[in-house]
Length: 479
Image (cartoon, rainbow, N blue to C red; front, top):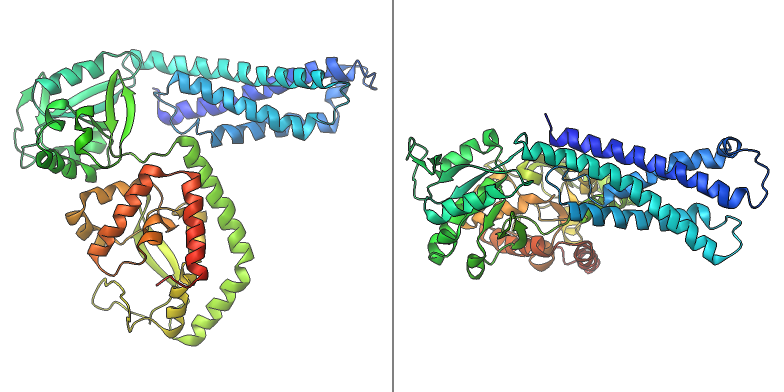
């Protein structure tokens, strides 16, 4: 049985073996074009290949390329991949890898002219691309054969029970190599899970929205499809349907006719020949997602090392200022709604919430004297670099909230569920534009900025938010 995990292992193993082979073949060519003509003291290729620099290169450079493959996002979605994207990704990583290897290992080779340099780098690129792509393509074709045989499918449901819904189902299932399989129709008018329990439409069961929520894991749903009939309806009705679907955290693909009705996330893609709009997926590429995580790890590691003296001083001052622990740990809801313990320096008196969750406000008497200063300069947030290292948070992302407040937010803004598609951040666009929230209404207002962030997420946007945050900290505008 083909699974995402097994397919990913195939790609990783295939890439490593193919890259090692490509580098080995390149060394044979390198030996014949450089070592032999230059009359270096190696009687044979085996003698040349036994020296330490060559052996280390055979170990190091394939590992370096594996890191590039990971950062390119190639392994994020091992199933149902686009062969065109696969080709372009392989070409780009081969170019970047060839340039890096040239400056690390080849630039000092005793090559008499620049033309030979270009020729050698071109050969390296051809080998890195050709060998790796052939292996990748064979694995991809193997996966496609399993998809076409029905061994691997992408279960979906269609919202609606009309001719538009029927036509959309058959168009989606008619394209080879995509694995689209509609498993049920959804009656948006059904008020409970028992409504239309035995009803069928077009040979498939008709279920309610509540049944979709109850069975999304068991069905393995990969998308919710909204046909033109619903998306072109009244704005209020369409918005009501969307609001009921957002909390399900399943990609929602909508007919283009609804573009004028939707002001949220809009990712246009050709889905099985249907130009549907994905309105609930963060606009972040796999490569950006991986580069963002790599940057988080690097910055958080360096920050914790460089700031360790400051962290120690703050900890000592907290112990001296008031009774209670140095750190404040609180459960928040993070990536894919997974709860985690956020770590902050304690800024309030111990046991500050005896009667249950309560938001802080300006002039809050629970905030200690030192805590007020730390909040002003956001020093209380520094321990969250540990959360970043653990993979629970990112440097930039929507601020995580407690489940108690999330339930209240969802009643006013169902789209808030979309913010859990990315890791929560130490800082966010909402924090930069709005600051701390002292009420649920202010949380909703701040969430609007974070939703815009999901539509424009990129490394450059993250950098801008970080620079604005630094400016806020320096000027003491944290409160």
